[in-house]
Length: 402
Image (tube, rainbow, N blue to C red; front, side, top):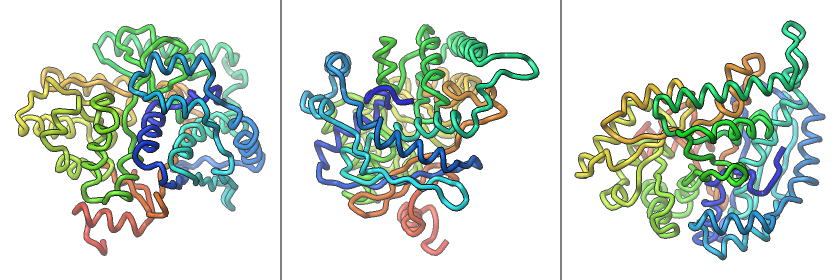
């Protein structure tokens, strides 16, 4: 399960600092969505409640973590590191129950600056608990092959070696982005423990494991930063306001712009010459990656910027083979790197008989104003139905009554 306040993704911490600086009075609500067919049990819910109430609030930034964070993450202001040192998860911000069809009804609500850290912690806890209490057969000795749980972990390490070697041989720079849907902390630890030895490995989004293995913590902006901005500063140009505010807080650090919160075209309309020059590159998280690469190259050329001075970070449901194919298409046209998540920490093929949970926890409202995520995949739209209808109209994707 969760083992530290830093057992979280870096982008949650970077957004937390930005929220504290710019929107300290804002309140937020997040909601859980289960996109898959797996269901839960009363015993599962009771144990999840216990962890939320009794164990997770005990985590705090240790003196050693405090010293490391100040030394290795200089983009964090001293005042923020002090805030994090005193931070504790507040269980009163979380409500969870079992629905009639055995799904989870989970809501997080509280000050944005404190409730923001729950998302990854809850998702990774739900995933590990599910594969420990509901679908736990994968841990048993295989009756056909006699393979034990320990042997399975050894085989998983070998799989990571093969994936790392394949990416390295194809000169694919990659990071590990798999905290939220990991099967267990142990498997996550094995994955990073093996992969960090690859020359192509550039870091992990998990701050605790970055510290443990002496690698770079990776992460910049999440969708919720832009979604929250849309409620506080206006939707039509939310990308512009969010990216400008990010520069104001981080002064050029953490310069990868997220492109698909409301679809990529509204993003490119706001990604003006100033921002295109200031940001090191953009992140792709939905839609056809090759179409997106062409669109980014076209945008930079139109701005008079050499695409080979910029980078695209691809992070949408990647496997090693998909990353390699994208790398070949981008070669000599634009730089690229890859954030690979669930296929490293809960590999679909390895765990074919008990696949990962397909779940999200997304920002639902700021100051009781509904927010939405549209993306370049219609199936990834999240938010209040009426708010989605208005957002699609504002960005010219659909008619108001469609």
